[in-house]
Image 1: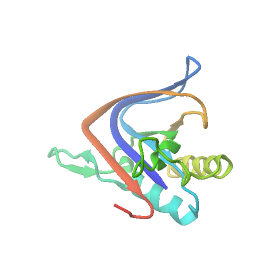
Image 2 (image 1 turned 180 degrees about the vertical axis):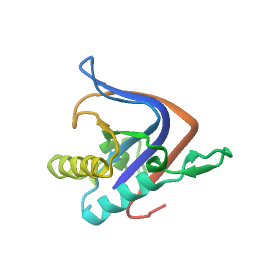
Image 3 (image 1 turned 135 degrees about the horizontal axis):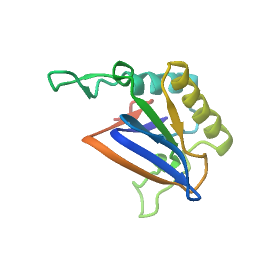
Image 4 (image 1 turned 60 degrees about the vertical axis):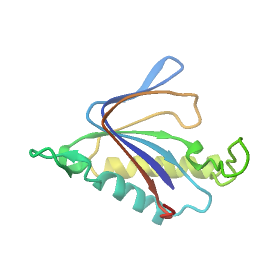
Amino acid sequence: MRALIQRVSKSSVVVDQQTTGAIATGLLVLLGVEKGDTEKDLRYTIEKTTGLRIFEDEQGKMNLSLLDVGGQMLVVSQFTLLGDVRRGRRPSFVEAASPEIANRMYEEFINSGRELGIDVQTGIFQAEMQVALVNEGPVTILIDSRKRF
């Protein structure tokens, strides 16, 4: 499982000219599910995401997590995070999970965040979306549950 995490002051997602999710201070999470991902990958990714100390404390140091600051989370399904561009110019998505599995794990990720008390907003799985954000910092972190980098 891969997650691209961006610390934002605001972010939103629009589908068919309708806003499906919008947040203020928090994290935009682009989430990609890979073939073979398990509950262990899901747990690792949600715990890392919500526990990342990337928000500033009173001294201006990145020392606080999303949970510490009471921030929101906008989660958007993003299978292209699994694109392999090592060969040729066209990305290969053969390692992306099937839509059925990816949607189930995407929903479980969302529900896990809500169970932690986070206000989680979402895009729509497999929809054509327009995502807007104001990246604070900028701070962008890439998480891979299989720890390949």
